[in-house]
Length: 579
Image 1 (cartoon, helix red, strand yellow):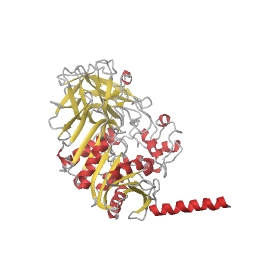
Image 2 (cartoon, helix red, strand yellow; image 1 turned 90 degrees about the horizontal axis):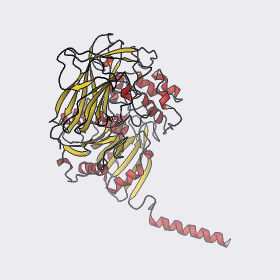
Image 3 (spheres, helix red, strand yellow; image 1 turned 120 degrees about the vertical axis):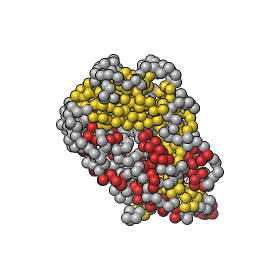
């Protein structure tokens, strides 16, 4: 009995001592407080969930806002929150609609513009806020920043946008370039189904990629996904996508943006288009950083077999901090007096500053496809040179069988589609045309957007043509730099689909996005032409039928012309006086 009284007395004494120290004084440490699951009302009555990390000291602070479908507790929020608080910010991590602790149904991108506006303005109104809000995000999280920005929330002051997804048809994830879906994306839809993060390990994603029709892949995976079907059922420039478009509205977005991507980022082309689009629209308050990174930005100096050297990983957190300090706090740190563009030159493995993107002094140089009619495989007679065909050259021909597509070297899920892989094993196939230049005699920097123009015909009513640009080392290693695809029915644009006339030659423009590679003396340029790159791109079945429900396959006979009347070429952005 006496012992019980003593214990009770000790507990009471501890409770009184805690009360004297103040409410929860030591729970998060002496400098930070956290409010979890704050209910943020949207204009339609739905409540989204936010965790806010704030300095404990009384006062008003600028806000950094992250909105994510990957669960606000799953993006290292505590670590990021502590770092932001230490720099004098409030950090808010929010689950987007239908994800985590937020109400509503998750329909990718459909509500993110208006919800983003409402979240930004809510943050600006809080008693601990200065009213200045910056947003940050990577991948999907970055895409929703842009969708909010076109709504023009008055308190949005600055953005940091990493590895950004783009409008439908401009990246690999929203129906893919020129309307070509990627079967790997089904794993992303699976991951973010419902309110939690789903386990991907039960499904054999490599096997599922072969399933037809595409619009039942989700059913076969064991998890019906309504938005997977919705996306497939609205191809091309269907107005259904309008709420997800921002890349035609750069004039409406005056916000300073720090754009960040990697040369092997799966959505790299989006970031570079956004920077160029914003600066062309007259917004001089933009910065761009491009490293030798995959979609996982700034994680490692090595990707696949390529080591990009000790400077490949940088103090990116420091660059982001300086950006927000300048725009949200007014810190005179000189960030806007520095060059606008910071690029990593692969090959040289060195960083360089530029004033703009694309680089103005670039010499766009056309290399023409040549052969004696037998460019098939690595062992064929395909060549590249700056000399145009002066007379007839026999076309190259190959057979494209959708049941046996050309492989794209990658893991089977969405996380990262390929890298600087050696494509010699793939180039052994006869349905891959290989065109290689003579060795360069001096170091040559190819840094900028790359396009291939083909004069080609097919026996199909629809088909794809793919192109790849590679750096061939003296030992034969054929390093993929960039690639692209065009779907025949969309050859005149995604808003003008039309079937092919079998046997008729058409002009096909293929956007290979961008690269920045310094070719050392002795290295060679190489272009691959094929009609598939699976599973990065869906197999075209060559019938012209609607893609979502198609299962019938037809083998196509493909012809690539490269004579004086039908010039096929690649345009390389060669930059003189590399710094």
